[in-house]
Amino acid sequence: MSGASLSDGTVLVVGADGLVGSALAESFGACGSVVVASRRKGSMLHPLDLSKDPSTWELPQQVSVAFLCGAVTSLQMCREKPMESRQINVTNTVALAQRLRALGARVVFFSSGLVFDGTKPFQSEADTVNPQCEYGRQKAETECMLLAMGKSVAIVRLTKVVAPELPLFWRWAEDLRAGRVVRPFSDYVMSPITLGLVAEAMRRLALNWSGGVWHVGADAQVSYTEAAFRLATRLGACADLVQPTTSREAGVDLETVPMHTTLGTTRLQTELGLAPPPALAVLDECFASL
Image (cartoon, rainbow, N blue to C red; front, side, top):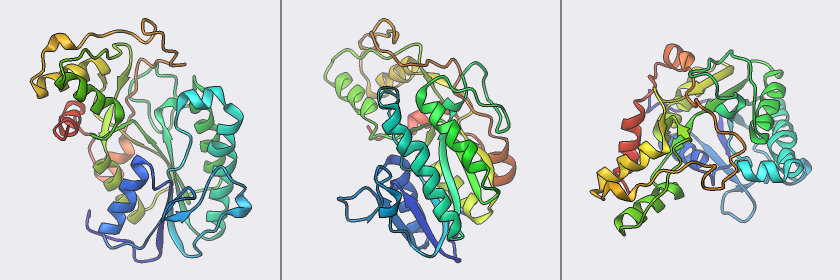
């Protein structure tokens, strides 16, 4: 399955300068699909700036499936600049999806587990959303409008996508190697998944299309403290260098601190044949490259 390509049109990746978008563009291209990778103006790729007026966008005319990865993902920016971030995350994203649908494209919109309130583990694809932060509210609003477009739209909620290039992880590794203390948040948890899993799930979805809501997540969650200790062990660093704190003690306003970040992955397993990966194994794979 992982070597199959789309034969009925172009794959458009909007936001190919981001972590997920760049991985999708590379993955589909390696499988032989025709990929148009779009990012903000100033790159060598097809320019499409979601912060600009939709009338300025130039879209390919033959698109089989479009992956909407571009967004304002900073929770702080969404909270501090709700109008500006909403213009990108809601208004212009919906406008882009509408134009793509008019061209006959199937649309995949990437969302987040932050559309839930984090009080329950493994929320299902059908559970009612209840966001507790501005970013989550924007994602939930966009989901609602896109789902109204019908079966040609898929909403893909991802848990925490991890990779060695994540700034937090390489800073931890750098500090631990230098004998410096790291202070992970013990009250913040993640359900880590790899870029490889996301890319494979999207290939299978594109080849075996079914709209609606999808979840991609790990089999469990781990605290950031547990992750830091695991990295220290892997690097052979002294465990005493890991000194847990909480977001409140650190004076950091995270807006929402969900108790649970796992997502139920019934459709991923039954329709795409992919099992949620072991959370600790995902971290080990990521840390092996640090």
